[in-house]
Image (cartoon, rainbow, N blue to C red):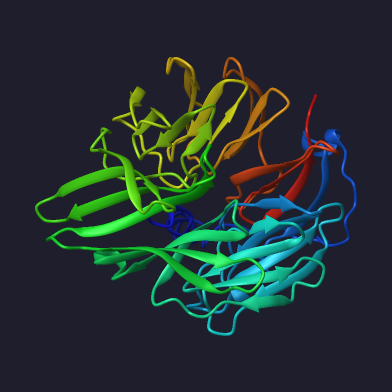
Length: 409
């Protein structure tokens, strides 16, 4: 179970900077190229994140796909509106708004999953498929009986996600498939509490095994809040045979799933990230191969990635971790910033926004560049950095603007 870290951060910033001078937006949409000598970095364009330029906020993670940069904002800046209930698509080359999408019932939208020319969003208890050219819905699914979380693509022409009944006191969880062509919802597996614990299912994944059988992986949390008791299972279930293949229990320092990233399957191994643990299992047997514990920092709404044999993550407090995936040995651990909103790899470098924008050497974790936003009024870089590899331009929010910045040498 997680909380919206950026929503809390945004509320704090609104209180802390409500009396601060906000940046002068000027001719924000008269997109002119600014040189490095002007700002200390090569700014290609910047676009105000919100019509209400006095507000500072960070939405869900930026997504770059199909020539568009996506982010979410409050619709119309209306008091009491949901956080991130309007999806915005910007042209990546100009920063001009191409389209926006919101649903009339003020449903919260999350980061899109962009597949083959379409964007798929969770709208609380529904899913929507949008045409990327127009932003119009292709379909909106029927309503589930509770809220969806973290859509993930599958090998079966479907999306998979969970539906939790009871909110923070969940008593039932469904793992559902959504047909990408029609939006039809099918309950794949229903898990109902049969004890005094509240139950939560997270990070379901569907894939074929070597025999062509349909396999389901998921994390299963059981919680009693007072007095606190927690348990967690990592489960591999054979859908084709309707049989449990293996289950490992209470394998971490903490028993919460953590991170926005599902366990990563790579070379017959399964890499799992909990709130304070990073672990590696044998994909076929569930045997624990190595584990790293972090009892002094939290990895909650961040992501984790694997490139060139190194697993990287960034904690909510800005700690950057690099781990050798073969041995589990920690290669580096640095605290360069103040928060973590996601980490990105490109061309032997790591990119993340943590008040300043950091670019690190991937092999050593050493800082190569540290960039501070040109804007005042309490603006600072946050959220995940996304990169256009073709043009070597990175896109990042500073609370007031989306900025397109040329990657420095």
